[in-house]
Length: 297
Length: 313
Image (cartoon, rainbow over all chains, first blue to last red; front, side, top):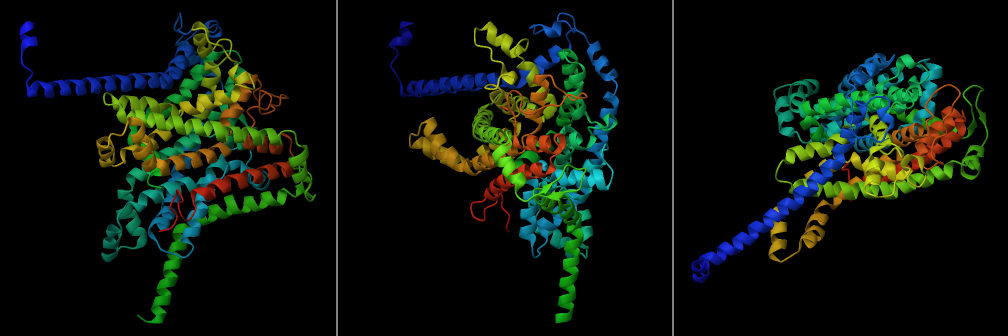
């Protein structure tokens, strides 16, 4: 002990002291940041946890203040799946989201390509109109649109008024794809044209393979837009339960099971689960898409 | 090249452009231009969808602005949400973005956890929050009660319903987190090093290095947040319906905005007036108010100079 204290202080040990203080500060910083991180994580995760826990409670316990189920009622999920209509809602949602996504991607690609890579008069105006369409609340045009589909084409009570417009380019998808295509160097396109490729061939053979991440992002966004859409099905499908989607049906499910929070939460989990599952397979495309909308703007 | 071939070439390129643009040209005319013009037309008509429309001048306009009891509350709520909800979202999103760029251990796990709620379908997320914030039996009030804090009525109390919706919006902050994260990682490292050499504190580094570098993204988040708020529909409607217990059903008609019009927004009002009261004329007026407000903010996004979305070359 005394030996250490009596030791003359060498310049080297001063450096060591400073280094140790710095290291302690980094450690404190690490602890502070990660505690904040855990606190934030609780805010984001606990709602999921409580929803799942309640979905496994008995009918009686769901009416109490308990947080954890005493008996684990896995049967709740079967009860939800057996609810009349639930299977139909799934089928309709898959039809709306699946077919809609394919139509959107196919119709938006050529438009995005023209906006990103052609030079033509009115291009700037066209892009401004695309952005305006993207920003427009759907409620602004819903009255004439509803009258058009319901009165002129007699399609109320079906999902077609939601699916058919997707064959004519979706503004958000066009904008997102255009942003992505801008990042593809023109040299590739020029090279293809020098080799005698037509514009369509260049798009199909050269641009599309390079634009895969952008297309994946657009497809995912469109799929989830339709999956989550509530307003559209409410307007066009509400009068016909056979045309309801999950988002619209889920709310009426709560109506039919007025006090059964356990079943409602089980249904909620069943509607959330596919989205989260898809996210784990396509994380990169999602994050890329979100970044494209904001940063490279 | 002769003038003739040049002209043919130009014409074929115009045809090519038209061909590539055609899906959108049709979509734009049928699903944007035509209904927008029709909405203006209907705003001057008395029309219930059954009897033929009758011209009634400015009656719909004066009715909505001076007599209709739900218009001003809806507009006020929208302004409240624009001010408070958008501000909270941007500040919290930036905070979470800053936090995630500093997390060294398990960053991927944290990022995923912070992002996931953004993916929850709005109806499902709203149902979950109405349950979580259920005044009597919800887990949040159980916990608040256990630690001796007041237990508000949340979605059933007019002064707490908008804060409850704000909490729901903050839960789904994942998109903003990603955008801020990308912007923060783009700030040049040298600027931080230079500031540190000058002895700048952590706050000064944030204020004089981080903020100026990411200010375009902050503005982008604000303006897109405002535009999103103009479209705010599903969450307040579902929250109001579920919390009030009035869902669909025959004969029962849900008056939006429960409790006491506190969650009423302009898009909900368009639906209520048009499709529940069958007053298409007045609904068209409200739709046009919504249109003008949205376009003002969109124009801000696209200003020629300093615009947040580059439109030109």
